[in-house]
Image (tube, rainbow, N blue to C red; front, side):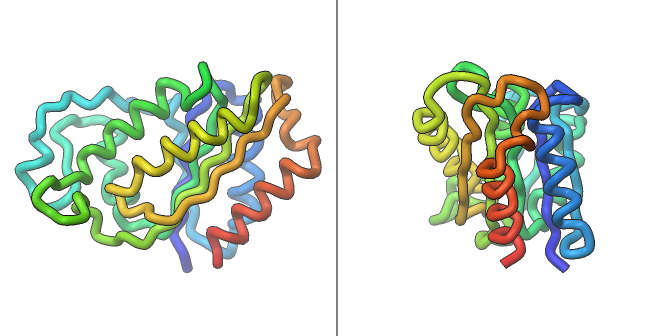
Length: 189
């Protein structure tokens, strides 16, 4: 059974990202082992840029927070889903901190720059935008997702639902629900 990590970067419990998290977790239930990680409820500190992680030959961080405890799950999962709102055209700050902390997977002495135990994992990114140009946000999301390659996520899909400023409204749009369904199918394939 595949292991899939769902990372939610929203702080709004009744928002669109939480609605998607619940929906996708239910769709994956019985088909994959699902772990959810709600960044807004966790202690995820900023990267210290101390390079202590570069002294090891496996992903490691000296900080003692919820991200450090999650490193083995990130390393061993088959796929990860990143959910969140669009804040100023990008990931919200709490997701940016999560992304920055994956620096702990980098090893500059290796040709592929990665200490990840697997380098064939899938990454799905689904952001919700209240207003603004969804295609611009999609391009930014794709750039952010590429940064997870050092963590072993070499294949990715991205989607941005536009015009979903009302909490939960993403689930009222058949095209947006279908995009979530397509991601789930892709992650399981």
